[in-house]
Image 1 (tube, helix red, strand yellow):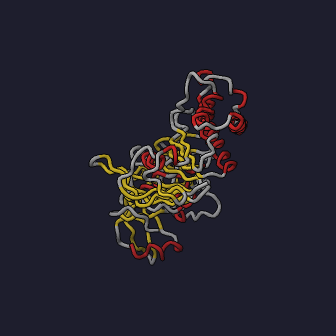
Image 2 (cartoon, one colour):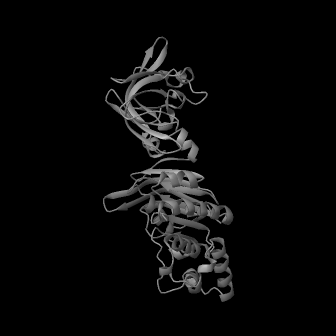
Image 3 (tube, helix red, strand yellow):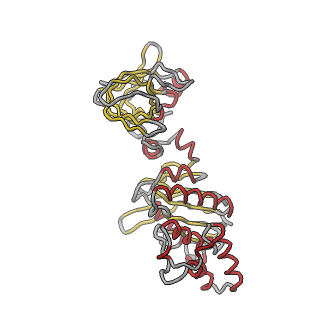
Length: 368
């Protein structure tokens, strides 16, 4: 078992810097998710940890050991890729046992480990089959089993669910979470899917253009994003953003969205943001905090009520997505399924201003 540490790590490909001063400390047995859009450096960070890429500056620790110059085979890691990478001419058993045979592990020990891992992944009845006789989900479980039998100190997973259909992705991500709980080993998981990140990780590292934006628990990232990028990336649908100004009015504060609406700021928020009065800001509100005025959840202050127009309605069964327009500003609300909102009709909406987000117009950093 081992913790991981990226200590001021840089990775350059010629003139292009892919990782920029990456600092992450991952305790033993944690499930950390690296998330971000394509090209943000998350897979490169994983490959550097695995030893598949050499770092340009800094140090990577596995446990107390600097592994910058340690060959991949000696780092005590196991990696699961997006591609299953199974040997098509070998049975499931032989695919899972292959790495152990190369290491000259005794036959009885190989058999014990393979059968134990197969039982854990519910593929014990598939050990005699070839990969071509397996479904995508079964192949991915074989790839996981091949990593498990090595009994590594660290599991690295690079978008392992990308090739699965939607239902299998949900099922397999639950299996991976259970696997982490059973093995009690350090997991580092790379994905571009924020839903996977939110549901699987103990902590999430959000990356953008090689720079770590924020590292925290899923709920903290959701409730207290450090900047507009994190706020927009975490949550589905994405947070609504408006160019606005913070003004004083009648002894209080209002968010003024020109040509659209004025929204009063709750008294409990005024102390935190009062020093920004008179400044241009970005106002952020999540779709789930925009309510049909007829179905406002208990405890939400209804004073921030405005009339808007509905462009598109998407009934989802458990909720309704309403695409709303007012004064040339377009945004999304997630309404109660009982809402009678209709396309092309007016609707009164309530913003839950206790859940509002305010960002600096220049730096895009959170002000609340």
